[in-house]
Length: 169
Image (cartoon, rainbow, N blue to C red):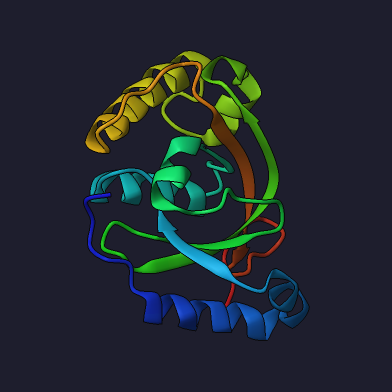
């Protein structure tokens, strides 16, 4: 992504705050990754805002990106710190559901949970097709609807929220 480098020191501080509040969860998680959504600072900020306001509770990614970066695929229970477009860590997320599939395996419910645009399947298909074609080309590859994708649901675990979803200290 063409953004500022993620602030790993600040991410460690955010993780330490989470671990202090929920030591058992943090210990069970072990490690975490530090990431941002999208492929531009603007997109990172837009998607993060949807996460923080409770609209976005799912994401999808191209398996080839993990392969190209030498990274393992996500797994249920893994924690990740999401940063804004300036690389500032803003929240700790925990993966709650995963499945692998192709572009055509996405349904209305998953498109709605991704929380983007008008939350329809048609919007999801149009925007994700554009995104994966663009990011594959940037990596020197191509993208096809038959490519394997990761469909991931998550929850925001830090900052802690009250029952209504409002962040609390």
